Amino acid sequence: MAGSDAKTPRERYRAQVRAEIKQHAWEQIATAGASALSLNAIAKRMGVSGPALYRYFAGRDELITELVRDAYRSLADAVHTAAVTGADPAALAHVLRDWALADPHRYFLVYGTPVPGYHAPDEITGISQEIMADLLTAWTAFEPDPPASPFAAHLADHRDWAGDHPAPPGVLRRALAFWTRLHGVLSLELAGHFTGMGFDPDRLFRAELDDLVGRAG
Amino acid sequence: MAGSDAKTPRERYRAQVRAEIKQHAWEQIATAGASALSLNAIAKRMGVSGPALYRYFAGRDELITELVRDAYRSLADAVHTAAVTGADPAALAHVLRDWALADPHRYFLVYGTPVPGYHAPDEITGISQEIMADLLTAWTAFEPDPPASPFAAHLADHRDWAGDHPAPPGVLRRALAFWTRLHGVLSLELAGHFTGMGFDPDRLFRAELDDLVGRAG
DNA sequence: AAATTTCGTTAGAAGGTATCAGGGAACCCT
DNA sequence: AGGGTTCCCTGATACCTTCTAACGAAATTT
Image (cartoon, rainbow over all chains, first blue to last red; front, side):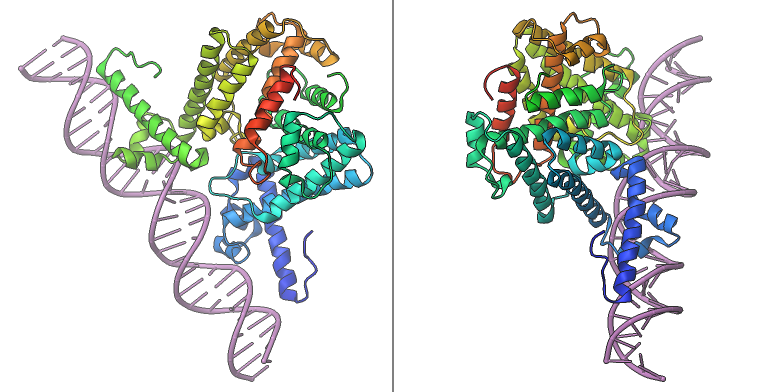
């Protein structure tokens, strides 16, 4: 967990209660989604009264923001763990898919419909860049210099999202397609848009992945 | 609008009020998203008291379900209008993109994070098949017999979603990729995940589209 | 030991969904 | 045209939600 090494007992207690609140929040989210998250219900389940939670989170929004951050962090860690052991893009794709299927609501918390007034803090864009960096590295190792294209050139001219990663234009293009295409399949699958269509979502995911890595889809 | 040809004055009045409620609902959704939709606020803006709306909709859920249905219908009509005038897949893609950009919250109502207990009624799956049929027809005209693949064969064996459309396996594969890839780009763009990344989302959309129709991406 | 900070409580405002009882208007039928 | 019926709207009510404010108790610091 994050920053549980506190000095004073008060801070330790505080961190522990915050963690407990978040855990209950995750359980609620996993059950009924983020929109059903209720501070009151969490308080009731913790055996304390509603307003008590406001000592630990400024409000529902701050709690959700923290959960989004944790979810991003969790995904970035999963991807990074695989990346440092030399995983190729296909392996990273399955890490992503496994992470998404493990808790669909968590995936939607990160990549789903944006909350009305919510705006991602800078820390989250930083985590997003971490994921992108691992993706770019894996793609560079897998296919050092993919064919260029006008759009790839455009990406090379607007590479804010790539940080200072030295990936060539073709790799930027590959990593971006990797992200958007797999998200397209995953989000539709998790949202249930494939149910009743008959085919196997896992095979679609693999087919799209095969397309990305150059094999026959 | 739908079904405004009623016999009795009572039914005409009823249909008109329902339409007015839905219009206010759309304004609210376009402003702050579906989660911010409030029956009370609609009633207030219409100059009537809260419970009055329950004569016209059983509750918030039924209103949202109706809005989802209307949104689906709107997209299907937009696609179909283009399809019957001989639009190719690229033109249909831009119809989809224009429809999505015209009201992002409406797009998320259809393809966004699913509502907790909500399950799509059969009518909606029917509309979804209409869209698919237009897609399959356009792809068949554009590329009558794309190369086969193991996954395309799987699709041909599980073609519930294609109704009785006679599209060959390769076309099924094309139409599915068309849907998932464009949704991947669009949903991430509309959710704001590209803001701050630097590149032009429209160019990414076109690049993915070029990839789909066989041109160099 | 005293002062201060922190915590959790109850009370309450503001707003939401949804149900119910009743009055009154509108419609339908005779 | 009048009588009966049906439908619509309102206000009251119950039960949620987030969130603020004020108070008392407990723990930490001085």
